[in-house]
Length: 180
Image: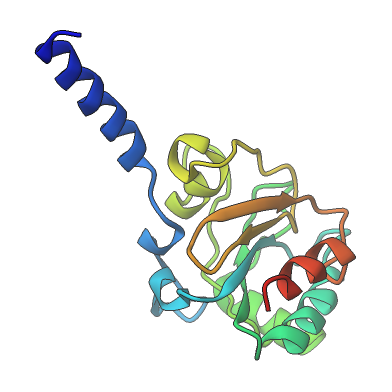
């Protein structure tokens, strides 16, 4: 191979390889409006979930809180992202969402500010979650509220769990308990 072509091949391959970012590259706002740096979660397994207050899956807040309480001392955290993308099932403000979650489900896991998880105004962290070109693992589509993404201790996407699967499922708990 000629030197110019070799350089072009290496440059292109390197660009593709290094264009993939990490979960830790993202910063978001909490439900209270504070900055939250995903890099603060290094070394923890993370379950990212898009939530809604007026959905058939809303009772999963209880299961998510149970999961968080059971494993929060084992380097595990849940990050909730309220979103109004599906049949307008999260119409509230951040303040209303926080009050609803606390009052009805006792939510203590970190909740972020309301975002969009699909479409033209998709939040960058969700773009990373759904695009293989960014996460290096898989393409996916956010199909409904309470879809869960599993992130390992190194900030890598591991899997997507669809809404129907409950937070305390064997699939999720065995993942959390692996490599302990």
